[in-house]
Length: 142
Ligand code: ATP
Image 1 (cartoon, rainbow, N blue to C red):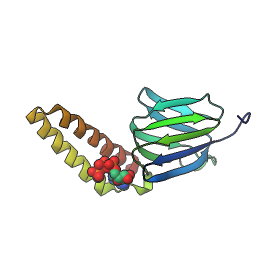
Image 2: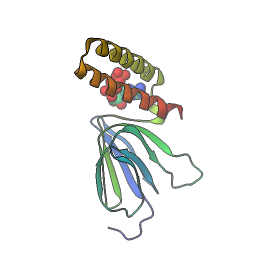
Image 3: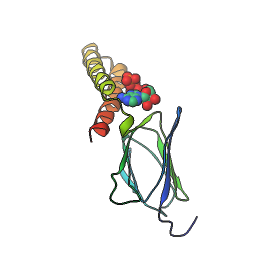
Image 4: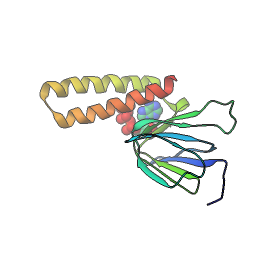
């Protein structure tokens, strides 16, 4: 490992290909156990991610953070390279807000129906779909 590196390389990949690659002085992810900030020279980490945003600080401090909506998956960090592997991930500007709104409404009506039918498996699926939609809306509207 290079001593005292000033940046880390972040790569976000999905089954559709690479969504993001950049160098950053700090990466912030939400793991299933809580928020994790990764700075250069951090010890190796592997962690499961929540359906949430990944925030990537810019090397130029006057520039806004990059925000990516990530649908679960995991992060692996070693030797100043962070790789995030997720089922899907969208950069803030690539999020289709109307589509996410429709997905949110669809998920909410599925949740109501599943509750009426006491269908726990469908309820759990619909709740995850709702999380994906709400996460996209939150990241897009920032
Ligand atoms: P939908 O019901 O709208 O398809 P979903 O949550 O079921 O939403 P996913 O299965 O997570 O969608 O993703 C399928 C593909 O569509 C992925 O490539 C994902 O990045 C993309 N995608 C899903 N929703 C959006 C959105 N609102 N804007 C941009 N891309 C999206």
